[in-house]
Amino acid sequence: MSPAKMPGMENFNPLRDAIPVGEIRRALVIKLRHHGDVLVSSPVFSVLKAHAPQAEIDALVYADTAEMVTLHPAIAQVHTIDRKWKQLGVMGQLKAELALYNALKARGYDLIIHLTEHWRGAWLCRLLKPRWAVGPTVKGRPKRWKQSFTHLQTMHNPLRHMAETNLDSLRRLGIQPGPDERRLTLVPGAAAEAAVAAHLAGFGLQGKDFIHVHPASRWFFKCWPVERMAALVERLQSAGHTVVLTAAPSNDEKRMLEAIQARLVKPAFSLSGQLSLKELAALTQAAKLFIGVDSAPMHIAAAVGTPTVALFGPSGDKQWGPWSANSRVVASTVHPCRPCGHDGCGGSKVSDCLTTIAVDDVMAASQEFLGA
Image (tube, rainbow, N blue to C red; front, side, top):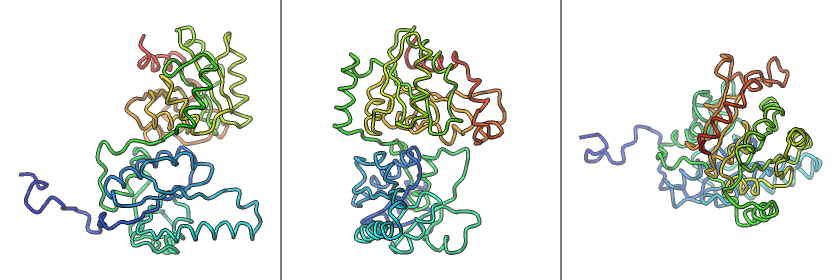
């Protein structure tokens, strides 16, 4: 007889300081990072809600990343910090910070889960005084960091996906995620889906009859060369596939798309700089395949369940690859130095391990989802 089936062992937990999940009334999950980082934390909300269904779970994120978690079915409220508060002057910023603190205080959190090394999370734990608080172990931090939390989580395993690292915060509390609870969650919403349907209708397209290609990342050392991306788009078009290109509203990304389009005999459909994050998710959800680099749109594709082909160079795909079984990572097999995490070889913003990936390799990975 296994220990789990022995009388009296059903609720056994080997963790001596596991928390009683049935007593959690309200919880706050803090993730103050970029868009992809926030999205990869979405399973934390799902798992916590599954194990503590009575709890109201809130999120605290930067305002520009809020669309990554709004409409998440496990989240009650999304609180935000606007990076532009610094532009309000000392009194204006203080007023905004006080309003946030009062809103959080009014919620009366029993549990705070801090998923980054940001000092703000530690100070909020001290000020809000939850019954339980978990944060990451950070080498070199003083005692006041450690004393801000009731539980400390081990982090920084480059072989462990960040989705699992985020979920380790729950494991540290005694909550073991089930295999089917760990998916990313992003809900585009009806408004975004309607807006994208209108764009597609304007192109004469419907859902699942096009490939979504997002060539850029905010970090250009993660990008494949323009000429190779253009060659891939032409190969896809020659094989009878329709391609829709997207880019963020930034001038750099829009110029990259223009450079790709200029190399194409038949320009692809483009929604460059025209979509909100929710609309980008709705477009990806409607596509039959997503192709891109290590970026937030790649994580969005994994979250909405679209087959994903992701190109990786200096960043680690084991830690940051698409969190989906319905995906393929294309990376160099001849550069033993990857993943180095550097901003290009020697800081040049150009990564040999990425620029040398062949068009044939990306096309082959794409055909696994598209058929011959």
